Image 1 (cartoon, rainbow, N blue to C red):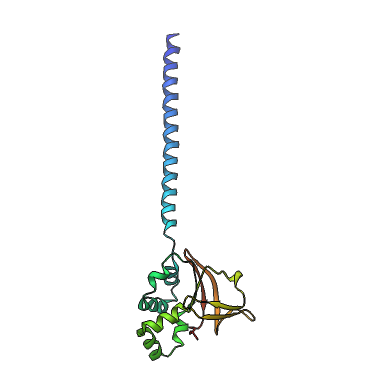
Image 2: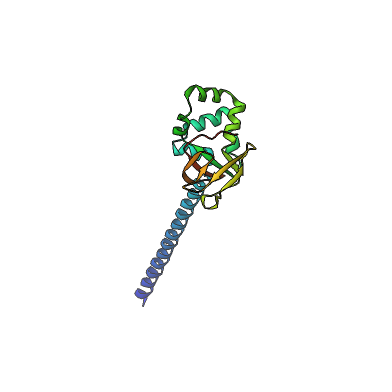
Length: 178
């Protein structure tokens, strides 16, 4: 009988050790999962605003330069929401270099042109309707939807580039306030 009792002690010790190992393994897995989730949440918090989204897209270098020259970067990094009709580098290239250089140097005129490309609120492509739309600049631009979406005389070439403070719709021409 004494022999069975020693065996029972070993079995109990083994079972206790096994329970401890299982508990430790579960604890480690939970800790690992919590760490991964925390890191994921930290990276998710770093969503991109309108400016960062445009810069990351890579085809808006001239727009980014113009926004900086006009002092509008902080505004478009703000809470919003904003809808931006963003001209590509190719759209800015349609403006003669001397005219573009003069525009970049004239902060008041540049600000007026750039804010004419911005509409308050977040307007997704599915919500676009033909008609007049008031811009942040104060004037109205004309949106038409027959034969593709146009903003004044600019064709919308890509839509619904979502940022954490609004949305970007890409246009092929720089639009000027009337």
